[in-house]
Image 1: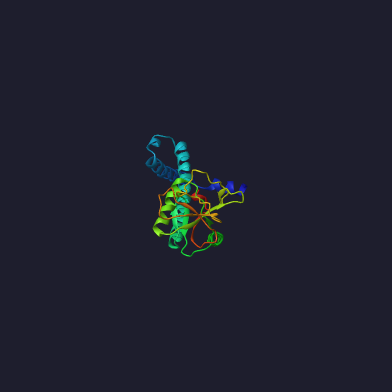
Image 2: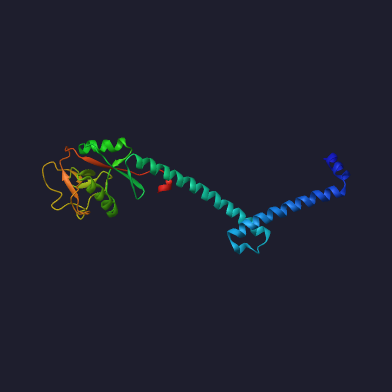
Length: 218
């Protein structure tokens, strides 16, 4: 430390002055650049002092970092949507829907959806009902839903939700035919009156629903 101080003491005063001047000049230029950026973003900082400008610059940096992260998330969303659409899935309201070409029993339809990392569809909203009814109408054939009659004779969804009496059954449905214990979406009907009860062993297409696990879709 003593040697360092001795070295400094032998330096010409003009050299030290030049170093200090350069530091001040560099700092001034940096502040001018920071001020220009901050004021360009928000003109209310035009007459603020350096401390407030530096604080605003720090907040601006955090915001840029957040927006960069959000942009990466959105790009990920675009990539996943594009990949699923190519595989035949249809995107609606933060979920994907797939109407199978192959026909299965109701039980095997559950397994078909599970193989796609999805579930046999449980209708949750009127908007979802109308959306799916339009998809089924375009196919001109019925498709299994995750809708079934339990041992107490109550209709419910695979999700565990009970089905109310005022739901979207077709006229005269659910019928009381023997073993008509599984629900499907019919194709020739009003959008909100399309559910029908069929024998579970009948072979039909199925509607699978997949909700992405990524937080950016929630």
